[in-house]
Structures are given as C-alpha cells and as structure tokens.
Length: 443
Ligand SMILES: NC(=O)c1ccc[n+]([C@@H]2O[C@H](COP(=O)([O-])OP(=O)(O)OC[C@H]3O[C@@H](n4cnc5c(N)ncnc54)[C@H](OP(=O)(O)O)[C@@H]3O)[C@@H](O)[C@H]2O)c1
Image (cartoon, rainbow, N blue to C red; front, side, top):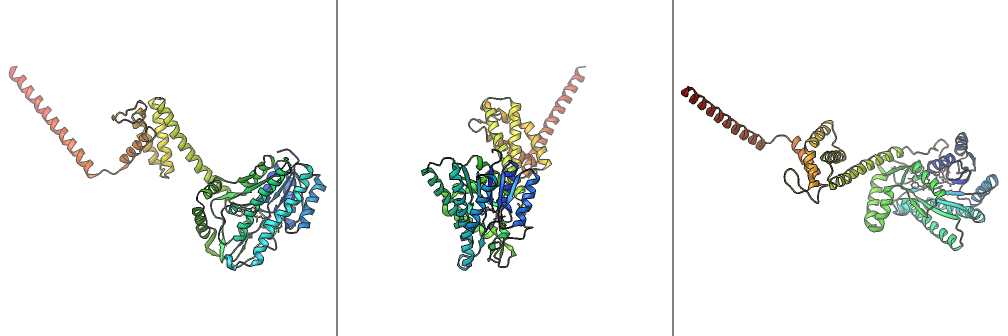
C-alpha cells in the first residue's frame, strides 16, 4: 500500500475497527478514527502515535448525518483528501421476531444501514471529486445466510451487500474507474460484538464456531484498499458456506438455524434483558480488539489441521508419482511410511508405540509394497491401477495384524507348525542313528 494514505474508519474503538486501524497505521497510513467513545479513541490515537503513525479521533454517532459529514470534512481539512473509507460501525439485537422491541429493531437498521449510507455519501462525494478512492463496507456472512432471533441484523447485512452492488453499478455508468466499492463478508469474529449486542432471549450470546480473529479481517481490509475487489468472504469455512448455500439453500438454512439455536445462544449461561450498546456505548475500558473467544488460537488450530491434511494428501500424490516412475524400493518404502504415518496421525491415534510399530512395519513391508511400480507385489498380487491405495491398505492391515491380540486359531496354527517340526526332527534323528549303527556293523 502506498505511504501516507488517508483512511477513515467508523467503529474504530473496538473489535475489527480497532484491529484495522492498527494494521493501517503499520502501513504508514494517516488515520481518522470515529465511534461514540471519545476516551477509547484517544487511547487508540496514543497507541498509534507510539508506533509512528498520524491519527486523529473524531467522536461520531453514525446515525447522525451531520456528524458523518463533519467526519469527512475533518479528514479533508487535516489531511487534504480521503483515500479509503471503512464503514464498519454496527450493532445487533437478539430476540424472537414477534417480541423484539420495535425501537431496537429500528435502531439496528438505523446504525447498520443508514450509518453506512451517510458514510458512503460523504466518502463518495470526496472520492468522486478526487476521481480516486476506495469505499469498504463491512457486511457479514449473516447477510448471505440469515439467522433466527436476529432478523434486523441479517436484513441490514444483506442490504449492505446490495448497497455495494448498486454503488458499483452507478460508478461504472459514470465511468469513474478510479473509485471502487468493496464489500467484506466476515464469518464469526473474535470481538466484543456479542456482549455489546442487545439481548431478549434469556440466554447469553456466545461466538458461534468457527471463530476467526479480527486481525484476519483487518488484513483483508488493508489488502482491499490497494487491490479492491467487489466482495471478499473471509475464511475458507465462510467461502464454503456461501458456495454451499447457492447449491442447497434449504439444507444450509436449516443447518444455520439449528446451529444458531445450539451454539450461538448459551444453554448454560442466562442473560437478563439488555439494550447492549444500541443507544449508548460500552464503558471505555471495554474497547479491546478481542472479545476473549480465542480467535487467534482457533485460527492457528484450523491452520495446523489444514497443514496435516495437505501434507497427507501431498504424500499420497508423491507416492503415486514415485511408483509411477518405477522409483527405487527404498523411496517407495519411505513414501509408504509417510502415507501411513499421516493417515494414522489424522485418525488421532498417534502414540509412541504406534510410531514404532509403523516404522518397523514400513521397514519390513516397504520394498514389497513399493514393488507395485512393477505391477506385481512379492505376494504375486497385481497392484496396477490402485498403487496409491493398495499399499496403504496392506500396510494398515499389517499394522492391525501386528497389534492385534493373538487369536485361538493363530495359537492352534503355531501349535500345528511346532508339532510338524518336532516330527521332522525326530525322523532325522532316527535316520542318523540307523546310519551310525550300519557304520559300526561294517567296521
Ligand atoms: N464479530 C463478528 O462476529 C462479526 C461478524 C461479521 C461481521 N461483523 C461486523 O464487523 C463490524 C465491527 O464489529 P465488531 O465485531 O468489531 O464489534 P464491536 O467491537 O462491537 O465494534 C462495533 C463498533 O461500532 C461502534 N458503534 C456502534 N454503534 C455506533 C454508532 N451509533 N455510531 C458510531 N459507532 C458506533 C462501536 O463503538 P462505540 O460503542 O464507541 O460507538 C464499536 O467501535 C460490524 O459491522 C459487524 O457487523 C462482525
């Protein structure tokens, strides 16, 4: 991103807005920070100044059109232009539709839709004059698949996606190619948002998995500022949900409803009725990026699982390639071992004994399993066309056999073998004794 970009962010005092401000500051942007809490914004300005960024705090209620226009004017007066405007301030209410207080319903629409509308008008006026700029609207996955008990929030986020389409169309018709509108679509994010929400369900609102970190959204927003896209869904789970919703809407909506009821509203922790931060902000000391839902840790955990899957898949592909090239038995054995190791790890059954057994088995079975490249294993079974799976299956079977307790029939078999050996040994001894006796006679 070019240095000294002028960035306005609404809802900058906590959560995604705060994380985004910090990230832009690290890119040497000049920041204009808005929300209702003066003290939280002042503290953030100090934090950003400490890392060498220029920032100013402009306390603003986004439902006040005059105040939003004043926010834009302050940005231009102080820094001469507006390069990026992030519409991010939002609130929510949880309650059954029939009993949700209509004032709260209206307030959510007012903050989440009209707040963005005022921001978009103020920003686009300046950007159209400049013939340059990026407006970024933070929507939500709930704007794609709405949830029960939070109708106005889902409606508002669907409206924000529609607003983005409409604004892009007008800019295209005006041939204003340098001005862009991007929509960010986050899934559940670890911010204080849920405890800021109004609530009339009697159940505490908790972050519904999968939970991502606010930094991930901030990173995407900063990227969009220099490489705008129409819409960006954050996280692979979110992207998969959007794709699946287009294919099987009823299934996804049913799943979302059940999941919200089960995992978004706690059955353990009760909550009294509250208007949350709809009409007044949270205390200044409740202005963190994280809401305490371990978004960073959970993101890292998901990444680790993805890596294991990737390495496992990669190993299978590598095995196929190696065997296809009639590679050395040693390489094939190594690939076999790695595949089985990965599969075992994925099955979560990794103990030291497993690894030892695996290594031991793979050492002994490797060359024979690897011989599939010649089309025939040492047992004479053709392995053409299934070289990737067959050796793995054989190795797993061998492992299972090695670890299995000895059965009656195995014992019986070994007894049979032992007695046959004993008979053969007895016969040999008798033959030798007879020959010795004959020698003595001759002598
Ligand atoms: N957390 C999630 O799971 C999630 C998921 C998808 C999308 N999002 C979206 O991400 C955005 C940021 O939310 P967040 O998760 O970071 O929650 P948050 O920490 O509660 O942030 C909301 C911000 O909006 C500000 N705000 C609220 N009402 C305002 C008003 N009337 N005027 C000006 N500012 C106001 C708040 O500051 P003051 O109280 O100081 O005014 C705060 O800075 C929202 O658009 C939200 O819909 C969140």
